[in-house]
Length: 341
Ligand SMILES: C[S@@+](CC[C@H](N)C(=O)[O-])C[C@H]1O[C@@H](n2cnc3c(N)ncnc32)[C@H](O)[C@@H]1O
Image (cartoon, rainbow, N blue to C red; front, side):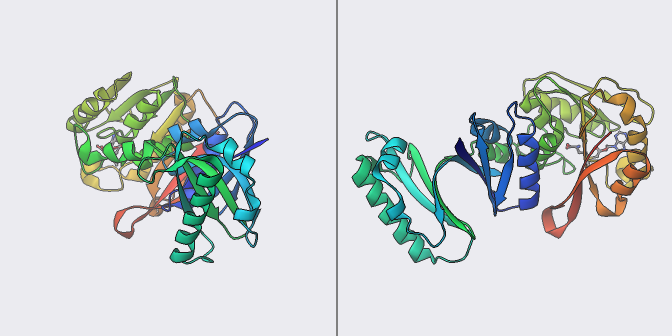
């Protein structure tokens, strides 16, 4: 069975692992992910790499592991020529990079290894080195126990997410959720194309834009007319189906949704018109049963730890699947919860 890998970006590693694990659960094939540091190892009969690269915000690169040896082993001595010729064709260009998570190698040692492995590949395959824009990217990952030589593809989604940050959207408001976190939340809730996603506090539509770009149908509710008009502008730019409603989740009824992905207001009375944020969440949880047609892990909420959403959810009979800490700007920590019935 081929061994595939995903490699997480350095930020929010535990959230990155949860995102990949959630996405693995959405694949039609049965896969499990084993973690070795920031590297997720996946044994599968079918290639899951395109799906992870297309969906995951916190996966930096992914691909195939074609050689694995013990960390003390001889890397170059364990790479037979036929393994290299099967991986890189003579007419292709390639680059070699190393990532060390075990602190065993200095920068100079890694640069030497990249040069030596590059020379070895060139000699075995006849392929040319191109560090700027290679057709094949060879990545060597050193973890605590292993050295893995991989054929890797860089995420194209991550630069696109940077281009979709709130300040670069057609409409901007400081309360908007950033694109990367919005994408992670949609993935934790298991949003799939064609599903209906509700954000009952949708503001300028940061979360709903990502849900729409995954291919879901978005429904947004917000009290604030100006923000709601902004969310329309932002959602129009995604080119997908959506519907936004001005109102208060405490007095509206919405049904037949597959997921709720939301970040309620964080207790600032100005944005809630006097209501306590936690009361709004309580009211949402009361209605969740009638809103949702999908039951398992269908809710992802981002809140401040003072709101203690976990306690509230458990006391109301919801199943709390995960609680993850995330660092937001200026040292602020928030909680990401996935919930279901
Ligand atoms: C943190 S912002 C939401 C950001 C948004 N989820 C995004 O993805 O960009 C919270 C929003 O809740 C809205 N809000 C506050 N009280 C509300 C209520 N009772 N019903 C609906 N929306 C409300 C505010 O107007 C504000 O836009």
